[in-house]
Image (cartoon, one colour):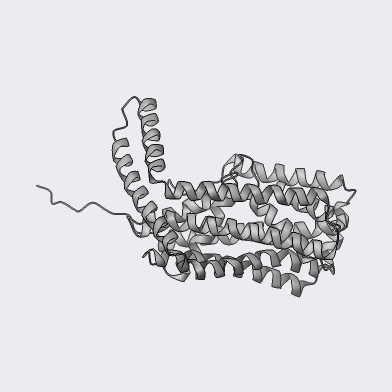
Length: 356
């Protein structure tokens, strides 16, 4: 078995159990009976719920083709099918490695570079660019959500302040990430410092550190060159941005359709705000697992705070998470197995030599 292949660990299994337990204990504080959630879920319109599942799968497709569009501009050619499979693979890695919001992106960089050696710097530029575009979408949908709510009803001051906080936080992170992407000297200093630390820890016994440093500096130069090229010609990002906007709308349509399947037409403003806040928190590596438990608690709290009945909030949250988490875990695992079994390059074997 490949040593680099992700493995299920005790922590991987334990954290989802702890998270789900915390969520069920939390909803009891709202005096919502578990049996009531199950009974409400049974009333869901299966046709609308199936549409939500289809939209969720289509959502990932638009994310993949948006990323592929950036790669194509950087002269890294992969097929639509491969980009789709690699995104599903990365989604699986994101789910099984808690509190690592960039693990799926690192996985995609590895997969493309494994297929096309030497493209690491350009692929990193593609995922960083898509991350920046995604942050812009996050801010846009937060603002759109608050505008929709203000137009239809008064907004809870706590929710309004929360939106302002996340908008400012995302904007600050965008600026910092953009500066790091432009300032090549910063990357050189970081790489050099990490190598020095490695030499100190290993007392100079790890002879490959210098080679790693050279390769890292080479990839960093390619990365910064690619980022500067993208910044100089922003018109080339129009197509990826449009595709990513469709991806975001599909993503936020899933909970809306889930509510609709339960016979409750939730305002779009509530969906935009809740979805954008959850994505914002998940995208920040804060050191706290945010895959199971905390998303459900956050979603239920926000829905309830904005006027949705607690029972409906909890039921819609659970159904939405089955689609956007547990179903994706299964599809991502299938994509990971397919890529490793069918698309992974064959291991190189040493040439045979004749015996004397």
